[in-house]
Amino acid sequence: MELPTVEELAGQLAAVSGAAELGPDDAIQRNSDIDSLDLMEWLYGFQNNYPGVGADESLFNDMDDTTTMRDVHAKLVALVQKAA
Picture 1 (tube, rainbow, N blue to C red):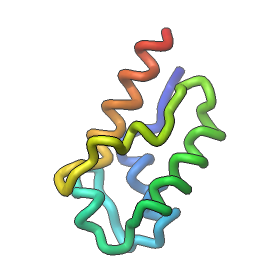
Picture 2: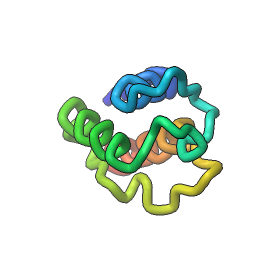
Picture 3: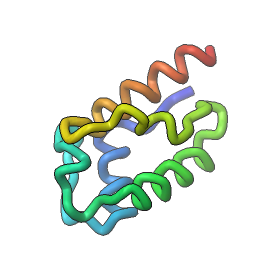
């Protein structure tokens, strides 16, 4: 299964949240335009587009003010590898 790139995921989250910009290495929680509802909305869209990945809200369980979309992408890659 091919996942979107980390840049695509960051762009999707920025679009969902209305954030002016979110780069793959920007800390998600430091962006004042992104809140937990935005993360859940983004996750819901991801789950609909990639149901076989098995992604759920646990992606964000250990999120802190340094977590980036690159970190989230790495977790998604691990889920895909585990499912294979």
